[in-house]
Length: 149
Ligand code: ADP
Ligand code: MG
View 1 (tube, helix red, strand yellow):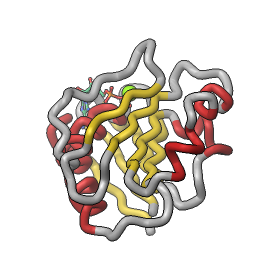
View 2 (view 1 turned 180 degrees about the vertical axis):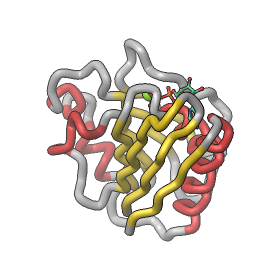
View 3 (view 1 turned 90 degrees about the horizontal axis):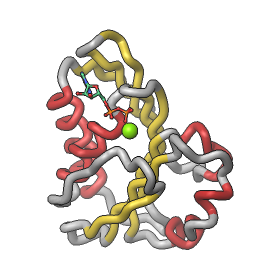
C-alpha cells in the first residue's frame, strides 16, 4: 500500500513521522525487528521526519544527522519496543560497513526498531518487510513523502 503526502514545513514532516511511530506502536510485535528504509533527495526531510518519529516513540534525545557516526541507538519509552537504531548511509561505500556493525543481530530482535537513511544505497541488505519512505524535494518548503508498506 502506498500513501502520498505533501508537507509544507519541517513541523508537518515531523508530525507525519510522529503519527507513523504511533501507528507502528499499535501493531503487535513481529518475529523480527521493525525496519524503515528512508530514501530520496538530500535535504528531502529524512532526518526531520525521524525527529518526529523518535518523539512518537517517546524518545527525548535530539535526533541529528550523524556526520561521523553511522549508527546511533536510543532507549524507546514504549511497552513493546526497547531500542531505536538510527543508521545513516550517506557516507558509506559498501553494505558491508553496515553488516560489520552487527546489523543481522540487531535485525533479529523484535524489540528493535530501525530507521535507515539513504537505504537505497544498501538496498540488498534491507529486509523485504521494510516500510519504505521516499522523500522528494518539490520546492524550498514543500516535500512529497511516499510511504509504502
Ligand atoms: P535529509 O535528512 O533528507 O537530507 P533533512 O531533514 O536533514 O533532510 O533536511 C531537510 C531540510 O529542509 C531542513 O533544513 C528543513 O528545515 C528544510 N525543510 C523545508 N521544508 C521542509 C519540509 N516540508 N519538510 C522537511 N524539511 C523541510
Ligand atoms: Mg539526513
